[in-house]
Image (cartoon, rainbow, N blue to C red):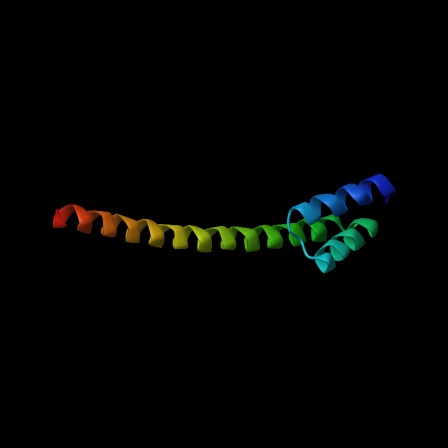
Length: 78
């Protein structure tokens, strides 16, 4: 694998929040021509990130509801 391509993959995966061991495994797959396994690894990381987003969204929704009920309560009190 060309050095420029390897560096591109390393930086991109690092920016995507991949752990060093995930990056190393992906680079090994690429070097060995196991592209489909590399794609599967990226899809797994994507699913992990999406689960994090959903957890964060649920927390935001909870805070929004709390803020809503507090404002509603304040309006009702006068």
